[in-house]
Image (cartoon, rainbow, N blue to C red; front, side):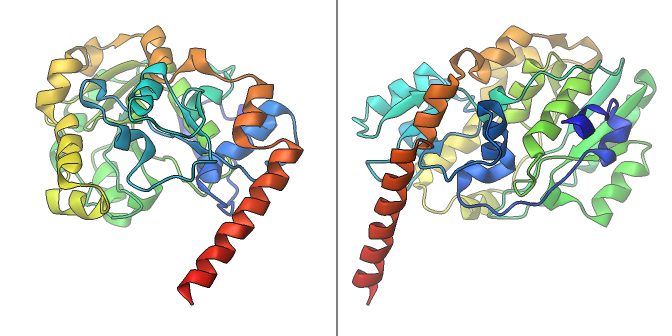
Length: 328
């Protein structure tokens, strides 16, 4: 934490510590289980036996249970942690048999950082690839727009996903006088803390795509906006990246990310970045901050108690053995 707090500006983010981790399951992604170990007060995270919904589901009006639990069948003995009471209601309506905890998003567990916002700085968050499929996220029109408003800001930083960092994209950003910041990486032990620091330091956030970063930025008291000309993911690539989901569910997600849907439900975001507003309370609601679990409930939900660890490893052993037997 000492090295983390020594970084006090977005220009210094390259000094932020990074440590590659091996992912045992989705709970380790972006260093979440390591973050929780620190919250609870233990040196290293135990093996987790649960599923935690990691991203903000902003399309409440058309949400379905598959958006929360995914297309695959979960084992009945594995609990799931959702962000909000509404998400629990959606899956309960499907007579979901697993134990359900309402615990907020992982981002809600990041500690508050004692740093000041950089006055009149704009953080532009680019659309990014999925790990299942690389997208071409170079949006020349959006970068041109950022260049056109550059004189109104002390600095404009462009946040890019670790998979998307390449020479072409970096050059396209820097030749317009904008600065590159590398964003989240699921294999980085400190990724969630890094993300929290970036949004805590940024004064304003603008983006060419809807996503969890909008909720994070609001929760960190940034002024937040979306550009009118949103990035449009290639439909064929989107279909490929979401294999396993029925076509109608994929189409529903594409619609939820469209200007049509977003302007109906989040019209307040479509303003010039210099006119955007802060709304920390709304951001805290989006990330489920009020639902953060106590240390005792956390350990139980994660399966970190001794009896749960023994049970979890035993059940896992028998499941693997059964698969081996039936595949022979």
